[in-house]
Image (tube, rainbow, N blue to C red; front, side):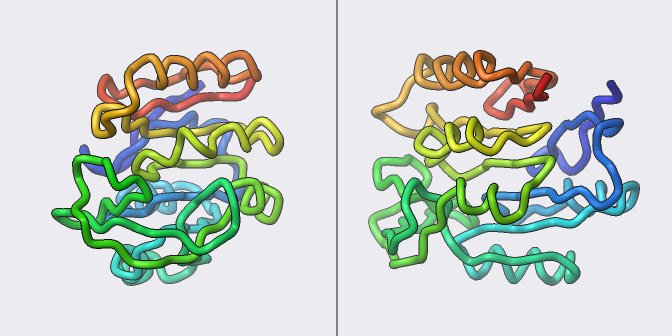
Length: 195
């Protein structure tokens, strides 16, 4: 394995570069306001990115940096429906969870798209989930449509009704379904590799 972290301290992720092939699809859910990982990977691999984010501002930023990609303005959810998106108190990190400490009381209606639908449509080799607490609701879709590598940022520290036990249980389920941790950033971001 050749595990390399690409991108800034804020928006970077580590993956096994040896298992990323030209032509692979990367499903990047939760773009936020940092696409440095994608920019650096595109310098060394000829891959295709699918960016999914409910924030128009986030997608516009990504589009300005990486014009040749697929962009989907929607929140990643358990069901395809309209949902309330609670807006960030700072920038970029909007959430479907009103109790999340980084969002305020102001919300807007946005489209939701099921992770399973995205996985089935794009068949990605890599999935990145940085979806501000919704990862706990949707990650099990990865068992139906497994990707070779998964990077998840777990947000239990920001949501009062979630604890480290919830994250540990999610990790346990991923490991039981054939994934192994290959990188842990020591905070919230973990990359898994399917054996």
